[in-house]
Length: 162
Image 1: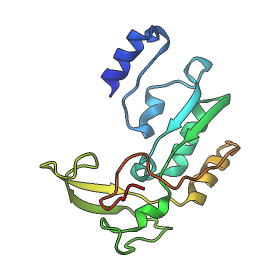
Image 2 (image 1 turned 90 degrees about the vertical axis):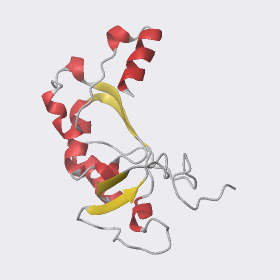
Image 3 (image 1 turned 45 degrees about the horizontal axis):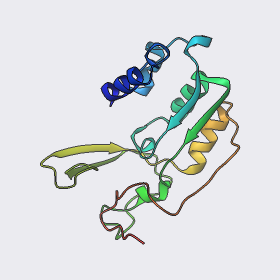
């Protein structure tokens, strides 16, 4: 993805004003200073990110640290209730307020359930209040909160298109 992003930056003449960093988010301070030249107008968190984050408070701190004072944080994420269910969505396996890692073994990938791969997954479910309180605690103001009744892609095994 980083190689493709660099290629697009070159094509769109944004190479000189663009920097891509591939690192563990919790190691970001080792790659960026906190001066005006290394602050961002927009910080974006996409679908499926927060389940990989063990420390939501540190994540929120890093967003506030590297977002310009008039910058915008945008988050598009699945509702955390999704992560309460088993893989078939037939029963609730985890608490909405789960504080421990959810460790599971699975076959395939989220993009290809039939891929010949097996992996151990370690995930964390964070409630909406945990996420919002962490952002507020680190100085972010919540202006808009929207929820949607659809998924951006068919990520669930029994999804029915309507």
